[in-house]
Image 1: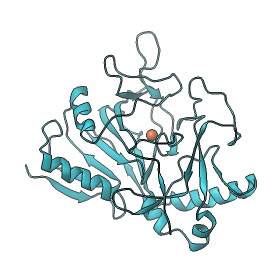
Image 2 (image 1 turned 60 degrees about the horizontal axis):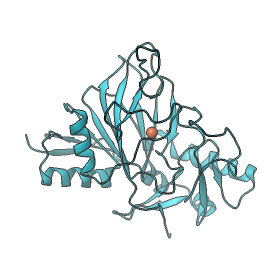
Image 3 (image 1 turned 120 degrees about the vertical axis):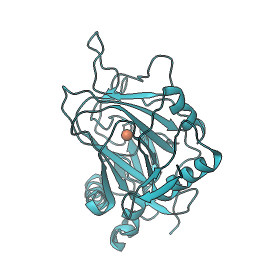
Image 4 (image 1 turned 90 degrees about the vertical axis):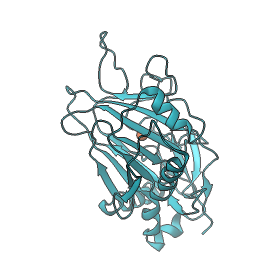
Length: 288
Ligand SMILES: [Fe+2]
């Protein structure tokens, strides 16, 4: 088996084949890390990873972030506090074993409501429904490069408030007061256009739509501008829908992608284990 890297689409994603993530050489790891920086997400299929393997691979990228606070707090498999379970499955008491249920998860960047969001997130597929539950990725570097000049001018030098009230499934995070006022909501301010710390490529940094706000505009102006930016960014030409197979591992660069999830049959089982690589710095503004 020799490592091979092929693009998933012309603008986003790289598939890496010919590797076993549980027995990775340093050279193979370096190739995967480069592909991740350049292509914004990396897909590796046909893996057989234990939670220890998933943690060991994740830690090669750096320190891990604890799981996000979701609708029922932070849910991890027993003994693995750095792994977060994304699942609709109920345990024998009828409680969900993970977060996000079976509904749609709206477009977002993971945990951008923190001052230092994670650099990366990865999902490993353990159980899947027969259909539905595709995870979509949006290439925010390509979206910025193609942004009309008029919109670039409107966001130049500005920051966006990223909301920490609701998660991508629309659930209120545990212990957070509900609000739809971006100024009262917990969250963080980040530059609207950020530069990738390794490649130097600029990306539009939108985070999530709900409770978002662009500084320096009236609420109505901000809403109109956000609608225009979002309509531009999530066009089909910048996105890709990943159809999962058991044993898929997908690692995305949280600084240059957004993702969303399609809903799926709530009576089917879907179990994913996720890890996150701690942010190495605050997102840095792009100086055009
Ligand atoms: Fe996410």
